Image 1 (cartoon, rainbow, N blue to C red):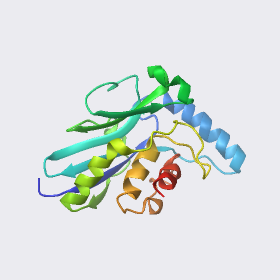
Image 2 (image 1 turned 180 degrees about the vertical axis):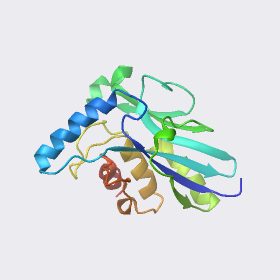
Image 3 (image 1 turned 90 degrees about the vertical axis):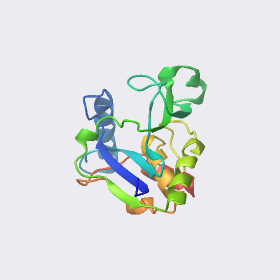
Amino acid sequence: MDKTGIRLWWLPVGAGGHVVIHTSRWWERWRTLREGRSPRPLFHAALEILVPDGRYAVEMAPAWGPGAGGPGVVATGPVGFRALVRSRFFRYEVRCWRDGVIPDLAYAPEAPVVFNLAASDAAALLARVPQVPLRVWGAKMAGGDMWNSNSLVSWLLQTSNIDAAALSPPNGGRAPGWLAGIDAAG
């Protein structure tokens, strides 16, 4: 492999018919009422890390369903309430696996955002994946944003000296949890 770096993918929440599309639409409707704005498309971020020994897929997902408990699980955290973490239905997984598959890439509305990095910087980012803070998924953070899968990606970018605050999803969309990861990196 001659290039090292990161590919940031923006995937529509619920692409591929996942149940999360219904809960996310409800959540976005509630937020629009509270904030007095129009609904916007919601996005989930995922990364591919390119290092000299290969390509690694990185994302955070529920500890149940497709891919759960499989190769590349490097950390787990609680969903909803910390005390419920013993049940896989209230647990998320941080996945980072060589030649891994990121579900729903076919639904990405545009090509990934590419960051070319030195091999040492890409390897350092890869090594940080298991070190992500394991906050409660859905819990409000200091800035008012909630911790979720987008927080993992923005935390990794921000801790790699990439200004995650300067990035946004396509089509005027929103990435709930993005700011929580930036705040956690600070």
